[in-house]
Each structure stands twice: as structure tokens, then as C-alpha cells.
Image (cartoon, rainbow, N blue to C red):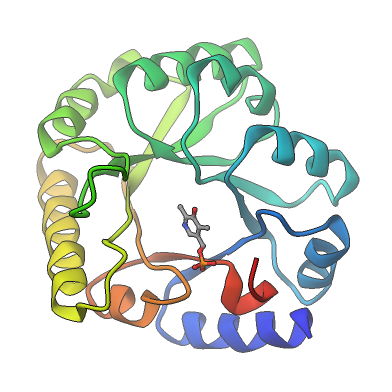
Length: 216
Ligand SMILES: *Cc1c(COP(=O)(O)O)cnc(C)c1O
């Protein structure tokens, strides 16, 4: 079931030219292995403890993406292996990722999370904060600033969601032209419920959980 769902979603996403990250939070290593065997290599997890538990039990060539809110004091647990941290929402966190990446003698890809939703509860930075971090990218030599991430409002109002995606795409294009380093090429937006709209509005990377693994 998971293998079939993965193949179906992957073919739809790939046909649009976007990258699929399979969001495996609360799913077992057996479930993840099924998607892996069907060809998936990019997996997203929300919680550090869960990621740290699963990672050693699964193939080493998986690219792990941390997509949930990350506390500064937990960066050290994932720094040895994480491929991309998508939910970077403060300068303090950027500074800590640099420190831990250096300690592990590796590069970590980072997406800066922009607050685009109406809900106050959703995390993310203002565009001004993002600009100021990117202007100092050279202070963070072990970080590859790979782009932006955003989460749209949880609403039935498709026009609202579209506006939020359009805002993030416009921001992404402006930054890519003016301040960002060469590595800046990913725009991560879109989940199971809204990814076709996100891709239509310029997303290059979608984070899909329930459409592959079923409801949590
Ligand atoms: C859980 C989660 C997803 C995947 O959500 P689905 O609706 O299951 O596809 C994507 N992005 C983030 C940040 C998440 O927390």
C-alpha cells in the first residue's frame, strides 16, 4: 500500500519537476523501509528524538530533512547526519547549526522558514530577518543556504492559500536575485492537501506525509 502510494505521488510530483520529501513522522521504520524500497530517498521528520531513534535503523543513503520546530539545544543530536534543516526560524538557530556542522566537519543545507500563514501559532521569520541572515552568509561557512520554506494557513479558502504561496515565491525570486548565495534554489512549500496548488505557484519541493503513509 505504502509502496503504491509513494510511486503514485512521486510520479505526479516528478511530472511537475518538483522534489518529493516523504514526511514520516509517527510512522514506523517498517513503513519507511517500504517507501525506501519503492525508491524514496528523501524523508522528513518533525521531532529530533524520533529522528535520532529511527536513523540508525534505516539505510545510510537516506537524506533526512528536519521539518519541525527545532530547539537550539537539540541541533547537536542531528548534526552528524542530517542532510537539510528546513525549519530554520531564528538567527540563533543558524549560529548553532554552523557551530555543530563545523564540529562534525560537514556541511548542512538549510532552508529559512518564512512566516506566511495567518495563524500566529505557525513559526517562521519575517522577510527582513531572512535578508539579514543571508547578507551575512559568509559568517556561516558550513551552512549551505539552500532556499526558503513556508507553511500556508490551514483553511478551506483556496484563494488565501494561493496568496500566501505567491508571496513566498515572490520573496524567493527577489532574494535569489539580490542577496542569496549560489546554492539558493529550493522553495519548499506544499503538503498533502495543498501541494498541487503550491507547485503551480512555483514550489520546487513538497513535503507529503498522509498522502503516502495514510492518516496519522
Ligand atoms: C506533518 C508535516 C507535513 C506533512 O503533512 P501531510 O498533510 O501529512 O502531508 C509537511 N510539512 C510539515 C512542516 C509538517 O509538519
